[in-house]
Structure formats: C-alpha cells, structure tokens
Length: 313
Image (cartoon, rainbow, N blue to C red; front, side, top):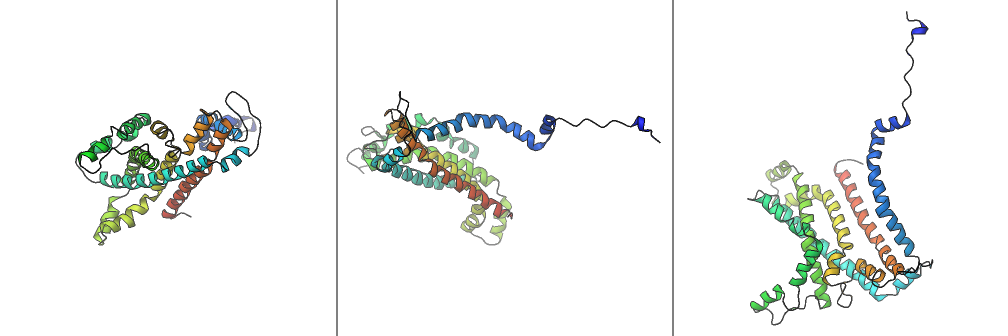
C-alpha cells in the first residue's frame, strides 16, 4: 500500500494563455486578430470619420464645426443628388439583372462537355482581370462620337446615316455605361455560378431525366433550387460592386452629360474633393449605407434558405 509520503504531486494548473492557445475557439480568435486589426484600421476608422464629417461643414483646408443634419437637409432639396440616386438605382438594377442572366447562361454553357472548355473558361475571365481604367479607356474609344467602331459598322450596313452620340446624349450615356459595366461583371457571375454548378451531383439530373422531366423542368426543379444559395451570395457581391462603382463612370463620363451618369459615389467625390465640400460629400457617401445594408440582408436571407434546403431549422 502506497504511503502518503510517496503520493505524486498534482500537476500545475495550465496558464490562461496556454488554455487559450490549446482551445479551438481561442486559437481561431488568435488567427482572426490580424484581420480584425486590419479592418479596424482601414475600414472602421474611415467609416466613422465619414459619418462624423457628414454632420459638419468641413471644407478642404478648414476644420469645420458640428452642424447636425444640415447637410442632409440640403441634400433633400438638391435635384442633382436625387438624380444621382435615380441613376444609381437604374444602373445597379439593369446591370445586375443583365449580368445575372448572361452570367447564368454562360455558366450553364461552360458546364457542358465542350471541346477546349478550359480554354474558354480562361478567356471568359479576361474582362474581369483587366484593370478597370484600361477597360474604361477602351470603351471610351468604342463610344467615341466620331470614330466609334459601332457607328462605323452600322453606317457601313446602311442602318444609320450619322454617328451615334453615345456619351453626349443623356440616355445614350446611361445605356453605354451600363453596357460597359455588364461586360466587366459577367465573368465574375459566370465563373462563380459555374463553381456552384460543379457541386450539384449529376446523378440528380439523371434521375429526373429517367422520370421523364424535360430540360426546363430539370433546370427549374433541380438545378436552380440547389444553386439558390450561391446565387444569393454572388448577386449580393455583384450589387455591391455595381452600386459603389466609381472608376468606370469617372473615366468614361465623369458624371456627364448634364449629370446624367452621376452615381452617388461619383457625386460624393465631386462634391468632396474637386468641390472642396468634405462634409457634403461625406453626407452623400453615408446616404449610400442603407442601400448597402439592404444588399447584405438579401445575402443573409439567401443563406437562411440554404439551411431550410438542408432540413435545418
């Protein structure tokens, strides 16, 4: 029988730091800490500063004072601001719908067993990887009022008699910038949806075909429901990118003609930097937040639908 003098002493209690590192949740928090610091410095601080500036009359070179909601009251009576809201909603809605429709069509096409499909998948990414400014300059030449290739082709075919003023007419300019945005955004939607299509078991479509389902029924009853979570996330990012677009508009039209293509982002920049009204520009930027939150909530409910599809509560 072991005597009390020979008992093994109890192991020392591990330190709080060691327990934190050895726990799975604590280790995950440590890995997330650098990203959290980065976001705090480069996102949270500018956002907070922008919200504060929206309540001041700060100008470039002069510190402002707190004026409450005066900037927002001024914007409520500003027709140019409301025109930019209309342009932003039109631009975002039409471009997002076209990017989704064409992107889904390309994804379905590239998901088939085509020859050289890997080559086509690589080519489809070119509009997305080319810098936005270079794309905008290319479209600036395509839409040139005198040397447009589109006008030249249509005139050669006898369809029109004079060059089309793409960027000089308000509505032509709106449709032109939408077309440029669609061209740039289709690859992102197509490749993302293609990745989602690759995760759908082919056996489900084969079973539906054996049961007599047509191609359209297989798409609407099998493919589309399983693709819904991916569509929700992809279209949320697409809407966010489109709503906050700046480079494409600024290079192509700088908001013209007569403010016909001014988005909220470009108008905010124009009022804040060239115009010197930092407070008013910040107020326009802050006014974009409710629309962005709506897009995020759309993504959230899309993910909730995925849980429902998996049988979770």
